[in-house]
Every structure is written in structure tokens, then in C-alpha cells.
Image (cartoon, rainbow over the protein chains, first blue to last red):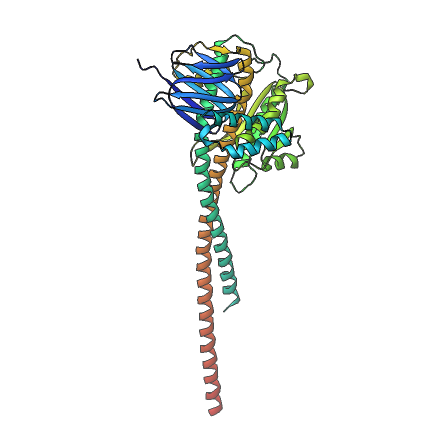
Length: 124
Length: 305
């Protein structure tokens, strides 16, 4: 049986990614969670962090998610985030500059965002 | 050239210039409607998924949350009114304001004290002119709202609903915005955001009456609901802002189209009048020449005699 689940990664103002996957790993407030086809219906709160999606054709999609929700039912998985970016869209150099600037200005929110982006970019 | 004719010519020139401007505004508004509609469509997946999730928690657990339970004696309500920063949009703003006033009146009849939050300079100006109290106002982004703007608008509302009523919090949250039905139809309407009407949300999430699956909540139903509801309000406010922007642009387009049409009519009328004046000038000149010539002829004939 070709076990796969349908994934929708949506940000508040656009659909970031959608497709079939065999495994999705995301970080909830109570720890990392891996969802495979046939998982029990789940609704969880996401932490800021990278989300890894193993697509059914063997590839890997990594996205930086800044808070949001994961919901899974009937082999359909939705990742809802206010802000989400695919690792491929992240400009590492610029993010590093952002991180340095955020550290200098002691802007913890910006620092956290930049950090999440960098981690997602490193994991791709 | 006669004075009359010169006046008509000048008026035709000025109306032609106005027509060019309104035509340009009409075209700009038309392109903005399309852009705004696209934004509404892009935000829909997030909104539907979020609604589903809220319905799932609200129906799938017995959690009592302040945002889903109705207060026994609601005494204070917040009304968020969405207007635009700029006018030239026909009755767009006055319709929204009228809807807000009707809602306020209804709530006050039910014995609730109303706090008004306003988006858009037009609404703010209307309330300030009448010296009514505004709890908070937001301006400068109504033409092209972003999610960050929606967050900014929603933050004080969420804070107000979380606070105890006695400490200046509110029990209910209503929103008045202009729904974008189609290019020709936009209706101002009000909706209650909080407390949530659970069955309505469930209906929206599963219109065919299917059952929602029994979810496992991570970390717990309360925590999920706690995190979900602010996002839900933000997403609703964002959607309302986008629809309001699309409606505003559609209303502007319509207003500018009729302004352009009117200018065209005016030019036609003025051209007719100018032609008439020119013709009258010519006729007068001819009759003056003829009159002058015959007077001259009479005079010569008289001296011969």
C-alpha cells in the first residue's frame, strides 16, 4: 500500500507548499513529533522551528515556521503558520546579517526569527 | 470671439481635464480590485484550516473557555468598524458607519455599553466630528492591508476580551465591515466574532454535516484553544480588512465611472451651447454688417436728392 499523507503548509497570506509526503516532523510545545500516514487525529501547537517533510518521491522539504498549529486527520495534514518560509527561499547571508543586527539591538523576537530561519536553511 | 463663447470653451477645457483624472482613477481602482481579490483568495486556505481547527477543539472537547462561553449578563461589548482612509468611493464609508451605528443602538438597547474601535481615517473623522468616544483607531493601511496590520488591530481587542469586565474588559466582540459580494455588489454587515458560536463555526468547517474526527490534543485542549483563538480573531480581522479593501476599490471604481460618464455628458451639453453661442455671434455680425450697409446706402441716397 502506498502509504502517504497529503500535506498543506499554509501561511496567513499564502499557501507555501502542498503535496504528498511519507513523514512530517515538526516541533510542538511538548517536543518534536513525527507524523506518518495512519497517525491518530492530532491537533497541536507548534513552536518556532524547522519543519521537515519527506515527500513521497524521496525528496525533503524543509520550512521555517514561526509559531502556528499542526492538525492531522484522515491522512490530511495541515501546518498553519502566521509566517512560514521554505528553506530554499531563505537567503542565508541576509539572515546572518539580520541575526547580528538583532543581537546588537537586543531584539529577542527578531533574533529568534533569524535563528529559526538559519536552522531551517542548515537542515535542507 | 464673443465673451459667451470664451466662457464655454474654458469650461469645456476644465471638464475635460476632470474627466481624464476620474477616468485614470477608475482604471487604477479596477486594477486594485483585482489585486485585493487575489489577496482574499490567497488568505482563504489559512482561514478555512483555522476555522476547522477551532471547530474541532470547540466541539471535540468539553473545555470551557472564556472565549467560547457566553457571559451570563453581558454588559460591555466592543465594536470594530472598518472604513477606508480615503473617500471618493460613493456611499462606501457612510454605509459602513450606518451599519455600525445601527449595531451600537441595538447593543445599547440590550443594555450593553459599547466600546468603538475604528480602522480608517473616514470613520475616525466621522466619530471625532460628533465628539463620540473612540477606544482605539488605526489608520494608514486600508488600501492594502497586510497580516501584520491585522495583528495590530486585533491585539487590543483580544486584550480587552481577556480582561475582566469590571476592569474595563468586554464580553462580546463585534465587527462591522463591507463584504465583497461581486464587482457590483458590496454590503456592509456586522458579525459577532466572540464569544464564538460553536455550532456556526462547525457548520462552516463541515458544511455537509460530516462528523469531525476525535482529535488528540498536544499539549492539551485548553492550551490549543488558548493559542488558537487569538489567531482565529486575527485571521477573521485580516479577512474583513481584505474584503473591506476590495469593496472600497470596487466602490471607487463605480463612483469614478459615473463621474467620468457625467463629465462626458457635461462636455456634450457645453459643446452644444458653445456652438449655439458661436452661431449667435455670426448671425449678429452679419445683421450688423447688413444693417450698416443699408444705413450707408440710405445716407448716400439722401445726399443725392
